[in-house]
Length: 115
Length: 117
Image (tube, rainbow over all chains, first blue to last red; front, side):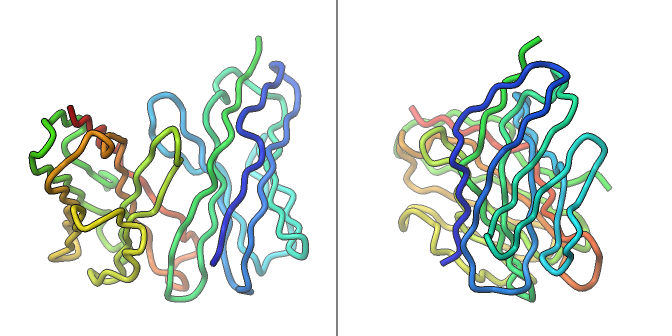
């Protein structure tokens, strides 16, 4: 069965610094999608970034970028120039490709940003 | 589009009572997911539907939980009878079918915070 593992329950970063959140997954599929979601205290789930497995190029969204290592089944999130508003719970997610469309999440990493 | 709409936002009920959570997905999305979030277990996938048909309900904790999707614009998650350990935030999410659009992420509702006393 596919699984998503986030090995860092909590992380802390200084404002304006860079932090990397880790995620690994286990799958036998070749076609799938990976996501990072942010959940602030409001509990709203917000998409941060997405990556299609067939794309070799790492996705980037402003200060957020990923390091996608398909062979190693690793999908880390890098946040550059951290801001106080980045403080939240971050979830890594795996979505099956094809018609299955099943979406599963890791256990999350709580990110604190220190002023 | 108003996004995924869940109701109620908060629910407090007594142990043994029936609880029904409601979800309206984004129009045109063909997949609907129900998740439960707790501190101990994180975000658990309870059940998901494709084209109104339940595909995988292996995450449903026990027979007290049931979910329906009578049409493309409405789904319910029912707990009967409720127990204190069911207290959690329940999320509904919807997504479009892969291949039809570039972006296949799930869009989440605001969640229902359920407290069973």
